[in-house]
Structure formats: C-alpha cells, structure tokens
Image (cartoon, rainbow, N blue to C red; front, side):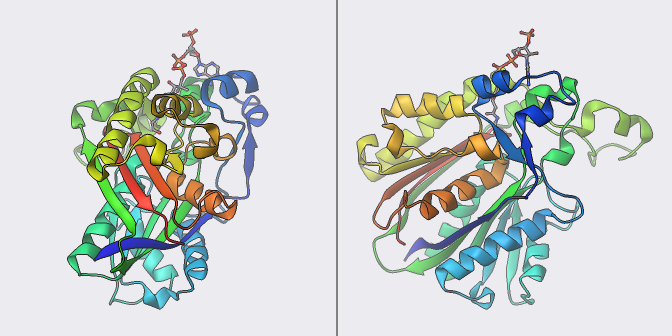
Length: 333
Ligand code: UT7
C-alpha cells in the first residue's frame, strides 16, 4: 500500500504587510530585505479573525473540496505547528472540532518547525503504509507574527517570519504512485540557535512581568549559523531522497523548498543544477511561514498548473531543532 496526495489547499490572512510598512516601526529598508531574503510582502494575521486552527480549517476545506471528499472521510489529523492556539491541547483537536468531526477521528500535533509539514507527511505515509488509516489530513499552520519582536532589535526575524496555513489530503493507493520516499533528521545540539525560550515549563514561575518585558518571549535566531547549516543539510537530504529512489536531480519536474530565504533556495537550486522553471518559490509574497510554507507553495504551484499529474516533485526543509527533511512524490492529481 502507498500513500498519495489527492487534494491540497491553503489559506493566508488578508492583511498584507509590505517591506515599506515595516520601515514605519523598524530601522530597515525594502532594498535590504529584498536583497538578503527575497521577501517583498508577507501576511500577518488579524487577531479579530484568524487563529491557527481556523486558518487550518479554511485550508483543509479547500483541500477536501479539491479532492472531492467530505470532512467525514478523514480518519486521522496530523497538525504541524510550533505556534499552537493553546499551550495545550494541540491545535489538531481544534481543527477536528472546526471540521465538525467527532471522537472517531484521532489527531496529533507535530512540533518540528520548518520541517513540520514533511514530518507530518512522513507520519501519515507510515500510518497509511501500515494499513491503520486510509485517509489522513496533514496540515501546516502558523501564526508567527505575534511572537516577533516588532522593534529594530528584532529586525533579523521580524522581516522574515509570517502567518498562513496549508493542507493536504493523503489517501491509500495500491498503485505505484504518490509518496516515494521520505527522509527525516534532527540535531538537538543546535536547539537554541532558533527558538522561543518562554514560557518554559521548567521555570518555577512560567509567567512574570519581568519575563514578559524581556526578550525571551520573542523568536531568537542566529541567522548566519542557521543559513550555513541550512544550505548543507538541504543538499544532503535531497541527495539522500534521490539515491533512495535511484533518481537524479535532472529527473525532477519540480522542487519546492521550504520558503526560508530566497537566497537559500537559490543556493540549493544551483547545487542541484535545476533551471528556474523547475523550482517554485513564493516567499516574495508570503515570507517564511514555517510549517505552512511547503503546503502553501504546493497548493499555489498546483493552482498555477506548475504541478501536474505524473510530475516528480521534491520537497525539502530545514529549520529549528535543528530538523531537516525531504520527500519525493510522484504527483497524482
Ligand atoms: O526557516 C527556518 C530557518 N531560518 C532561516 O533559514 C533563516 C536563515 N538566515 C537568514 O535568512 C539570514 O541570516 C538573515 C536574513 C536572517 C540575516 O541576513 P544576514 O545576511 O545573515 O545578515 P546578518 O544577520 O549577518 O546581519 C548583517 C547586517 C548587520 O549589521 P552590521 O552588524 O553588519 O552593521 C545587521 O544588524 O545587517 C543588519 N540587519 C539589518 N539591516 C537592515 C539585520 N537585519 C536587518 C534588517 N534591515 N532587517
């Protein structure tokens, strides 16, 4: 038994924040941001309207519609996010509730940051291959903007990270198609290179005025270190997937990298010697939406006719943890 993606959807908040908007409260320029990251604009959530769970719900409903399925067809939910609505429970159960599903459906949350969607896809693939479930909803959704230091001190993160959601419906198939291989890695030695420290459970007092006023509630990133590791790990993990399937980079029809930084994507593209029309990037419009970036990009690539039935798709990610991952997919719809 194999697993294949039968529907994909995404949702991004309506609120567009351009680089020029950021210059109103941060000492930065449109030129710097575009030059170093490729980002022109991003979406930040509307606190009156958007939650991680309801953005995921909108993306999931679109994926279901495109798959020609009903929410009641879903047997299992895999929810990748590092920005859950609550400290606990995870957002998976909230999505289940918003889809109107009852207790017969199981839900788990995956907290693997930028690699979260591929970890989720790999988890779903394994459950389907084991025969335990036949239809699984895999989601990546994030609200990062509320965890950013929106002052000049936070300018290396607040220009990059953003909000959004993407969803894929995976189903069992006895055909030789769909997810061909997945590869997952992590190295906790670098956990504090990209993290949000508080509120941490190992503090006697989780919240205090002193803590809230300090920097530890905001995203911390050692950008240069993350960049250096990312370019190496991306290439490694993609080659691992190619070797596992006996494929070469020229066999790929489309490469969708996690949208971390356009410079990282371009570096990896050069290493793989892929032409521009075989790489899909949309970081220019959405920034880095962590676990949501790959499914949002897959959904847009599909909408634009750049991802077609029979295409060999490679997805790969690197991020906090560190964690990194890849998958090769024989696209089947
Ligand atoms: O998604 C998961 C993983 N995340 C990533 O993969 C992100 C990886 N890292 C990066 O994308 C890049 O490191 C950044 C875009 C975050 C930063 O770019 P950089 O080229 O590594 O810049 P830097 O941090 O080395 O800073 C260079 C200079 C500094 O000024 P000085 O010290 O040279 O005077 C920074 O203060 O650029 C300054 N700077 C900025 N200037 C204007 C940093 N952020 C900004 C900014 N606007 N937004």
